[in-house]
Image (cartoon, rainbow, N blue to C red; front, side, top):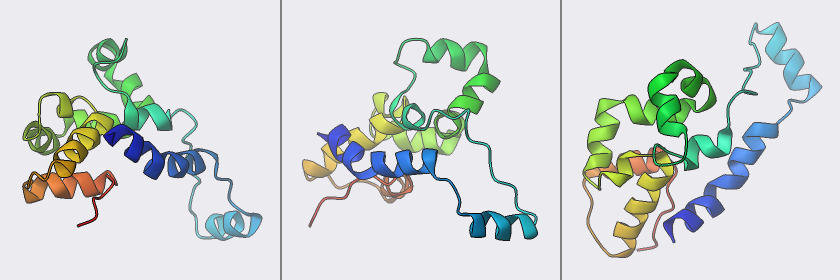
Length: 135
């Protein structure tokens, strides 16, 4: 259920981020200000959030070609390599440490069950735009 809620809340935003083309006016304004349009064509936006080390081939890519992994899955790479993030996710479960999507789903399951979670867990959950439960 946590995955479905997460998809419903975040998939459209990720799709829009992947395909957003600036207007001419915005592009001109950015160019005049010296801003460069980020090249995010190599990023797999959907799998960056919802795949993890338990999926076929990702653990090997992470371990054997970390630079390639980082280019394709930058948010997931940061999630997996940030010690504070990993310690916080570990308060939920070892499985929550394997990906952003699994962390969000496992926290959501605890919230639905009425479990009071530590502040740092909730901060990380909010960072990843996890679906909130109505009080």
